[in-house]
Image (cartoon, rainbow, N blue to C red; front, top):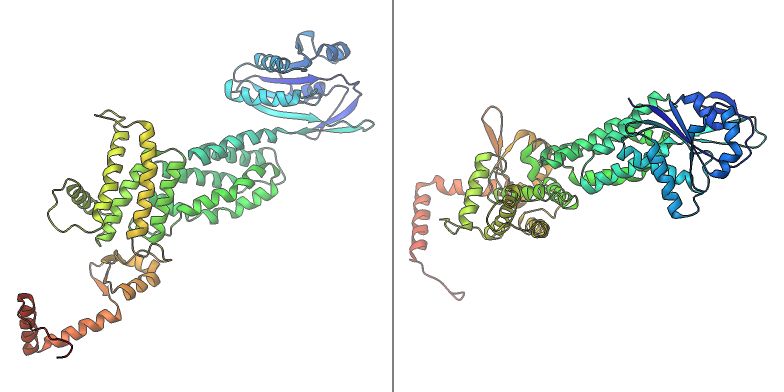
Length: 492
């Protein structure tokens, strides 16, 4: 732990003896700098003073224990160059890794503002830890005067960087650290309100950002779905702790963003529900916003493979199914596929072709023939994201309706998914005459079909019960296929 130092500014006022109160302790002094010394006991206390201030108060300061070498002469600050001179002198006096108490009580003109700028700079450039920033109130004739601790206003700088890093870079680590420190400080300083939810909320948001950074859509959806339940204790902290105001201003914005990633998914197969697809599109938008183009290309590619399986009524997350679909689309792309090509497949193949090409370029760090420029990758990724969204809106059944995308997913489903989405699935079965195979752990299961489909099947069974009926029906079908039919006009 570094040395504890203090810095103060000396003004030109005629100071009087008063009782300064610092953390409920009383110090009867003429100079607040002496009270700061007695309270914090720094190894060195630098007194920054203009020529006039030093002439007026040097002897008085020496009489109360300061030494000549403690004084650091500074200009009056009447020009920009003089203010930069002040900045340089303060930075020069504070060594690397120090702990610092800053007293701005007698700062003249804009000296306190310069002092704050210096403190921010020292924290980053010299790893200086600010123990306290103090401002002594003084009312003429008052027997006691409180010395305010305004250190928490330095937190505004941290809030700014932390929230900006979260929103612009998708990194929640700084915000998590800030909330953890504030949480701990409420207990260390024995504040009236002891934090309950700051640390948990910071860790929670940071965890979602980490899941996003390594492209884990299921984790993101599941965790984001808990966002609103994480805020009860947080709201109380924000209400009772005034220095958390910066977070109050951004908390709702953060929660609204998390809502975009939320989907009530029970397992990974459900990420291709309506909400799951919407959440993945929102994640792609997030990657573009925070300049994570490799992640965007990865999710675009994987989302499209899943959508192709949806449209082919196949299971969407089994590795062998995804490999087979990827091989099919690759064969279509190379024009070597033998079989029926669905109407929508050339469109999805074109998007996957580009997303795969650009993703591989990024993954191989451009170490390939004819690498793309950074600008081209950024521009193309944004265009591919928009093409993917348009493909979803155009081809995925029910996407624009307020229901789960089931119609092409209904081949097989687990019992837990049926429980979670029964109303939506029944709607799809009824409206689209789909057949739903419900799997159970026993290996057996059941089949769910619409009443209309059931009646149709029963009619067919009835027709085929009679051998004569079945024979006539089969012969009629053969005649129809061979063209042995007699067409009749309306008049006939």
